[in-house]
Length: 95
Image (cartoon, rainbow, N blue to C red; front, side):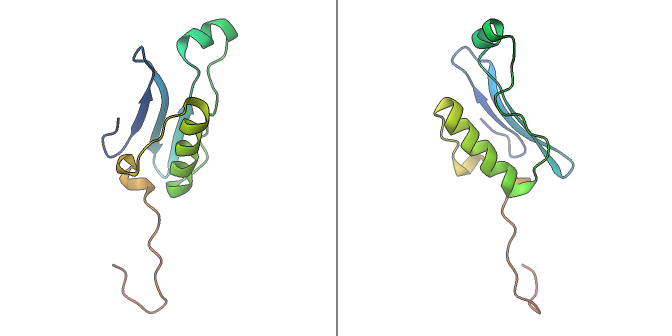
């Protein structure tokens, strides 16, 4: 699920397993164990990062959702702030 700025991956019981959002230029990636595992193991984070930006954050989030939960997060959910930068030719006018 996404709203153009944030992306959520929810578990079968509705809990948020993974979330991608941004705070300024820095992405907030939180990938957590399901609640039942958190209770048993006493820890929540599987892959939490708050040091990536833009397309690198998106790529990391997509890979983590697939690796930990087998969820393919489609390109249609990519937040606007995580779009890959457009390469420009020196001397050209930016699009």
